[in-house]
Length: 123
Image 1 (cartoon, helix red, strand yellow):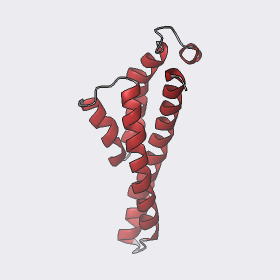
Image 2 (cartoon, helix red, strand yellow):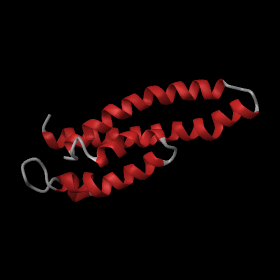
Image 3 (tube, one colour):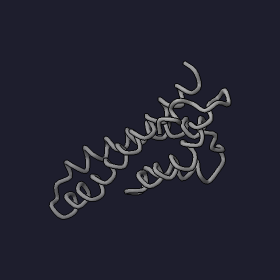
Image 4 (tube, one colour):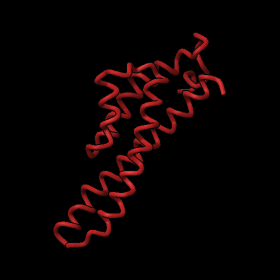
C-alpha cells in the first residue's frame, strides 16, 4: 500500500472514530450519567461507559497514527489536544474539523512523491 493510500485510509478511520467516540461521550454525559444520578438507573451509563472506554482506546491509536502521517510533531500541544479530545464532550467534533483544515487537507494536497494527489483535487 503506498503512502498516499495509507494516509487516506487512516484519515478516514480517524474521522469515523472521532465522531463515534464523541457521540458515545455525549450520550454518556448527557443521558447515561443523569439517568444514573436522578433516576437511579445505571444501565445506560454502564453500557455506554464501557463502549466509550473501548472506543477511546481505538481512537487514541488511530489518532496517533494519523498525527504521524500528516506530520504533526509527536511532542506537540496539537498531538496532545487531538488525543485528549475524546475526554471532553463535543471537543472531538471541533478538533476533527480544525485538524482537517489545518493539517489533513494540506498533507493531502502534496502527496509523498511531491505531486498534487487526486484526493486533494477532489476535496
